[in-house]
Image 1 (tube, one colour):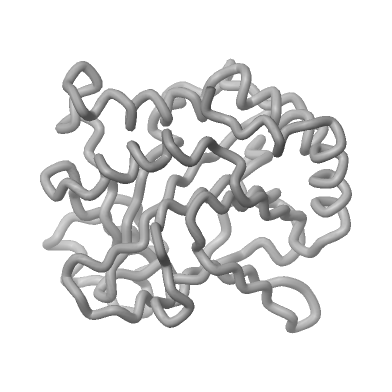
Image 2: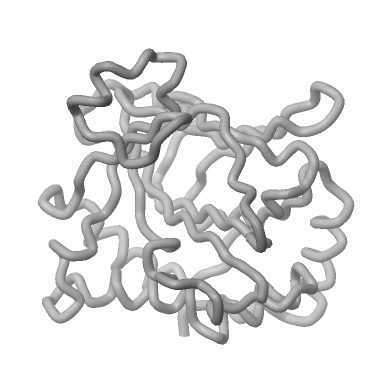
Length: 231
């Protein structure tokens, strides 16, 4: 089982719901939502360098190639990071299987039912053409960035960020920052097995990531990002 059962009791879900509706943006932070041993196995896979490729987005175009990226002004660049190459890491190969299994679980009926209970909306992939592209692993190092942006789109109800950084230190940077309300931004450190769930259409949900401060070539901030829709 992927979930930590102690974190998904009826009492816990009521508490998550109360926090969600009482915050700006509408968000909740859940620590230790998933089984640590299984996440440890996933993290081990993510350390392998051969299954990553660079992803670049500008405010006017997604998946920008290198030639176009060089012509894009710095003020128009909003994402440079690595994305896990699911095709290169075959689901049928050991040891990649567990990493694929977790991504599949995050789009399972069981997990989407949990989200539906917290957000009180029916989360489903019934109208999502390619669900698998909406859940994946990402990493950032000191040269990368995720600048201010919004994740809202028609029918998108929930966004999830799950952090997979073992022994992350406060001085490593990489914090998630929500714009918040009344000039009160919300800053969330990317601690291991910390899950941030938020409504991307709620006030103050625009967000960005503070720079990773370690200059080490192997110092990466890892996370899963997953987006969900209603019918």
